[in-house]
Length: 333
Image (tube, rainbow, N blue to C red; front, side, top):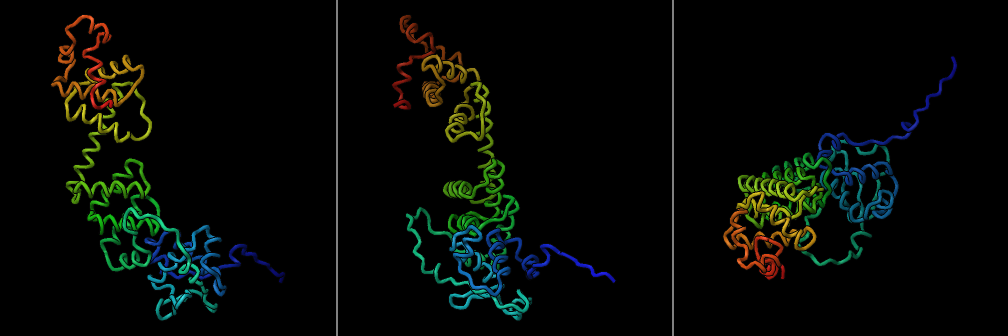
């Protein structure tokens, strides 16, 4: 019988991965944690440092140590002094690597490294081991961590989870409010955790601490966006991207708070362009603010503010108010 040679290609070199990595931990493990674990398993029997792993995975050594600590807290790895190694069969109920010497990772270099000092603006985020412990022991936070990954559509890093934990523990936002916060930010196509953190802190400072208040906050933003959509249409402006905070505040104030009609806002726009030769949102706001303080909100009422003096009318280019008074308004100072 002729001999048959079978070439398995990449399958000639394989290594074992415990079932529990997929069955129990893959939902909460981020990309960094999985990369570090796979690298450790692949290089079983070799001595390596967090720096060499970091170079291979394009990660900072501190992040490598943090990711490895995730698996320590899950029970897959054990730490003995400054060395990490796969846990025993009795403790993991599975063999990580069959018939091989455990991989050893020296952590002392990271522990002794001098980290650059930064002026803190908020208390430091929780560490990886603390976050892992909270996920294991706190079902509510474990739910939030899993739900957040589903809403954002990607695995969250330890730093991302630390932001969520701080919003909950430090800023006092309940889990259901944080979930609404995430959905709100994603609906605006804002996926960055820094942005989510800033909005969450703002909500906390404004006392948005339950679902009802969160719904009201989201409705308020929706009304502001609708107002800016109307104003930009009146101005004939093609909007690109999300409206700015100033655009939202001004348009919401003109339409929803002060009750100006479309033709009055258009008059303010035309007056600004005629006077300044360009579109200037703050100048338009100054005009409308002046009208509001004078108690006029319709075009007919505004026209009654015309100067009685004919020469004044001519110098004001037939506008419905004295430009010098508008420019002396504190909005323009």
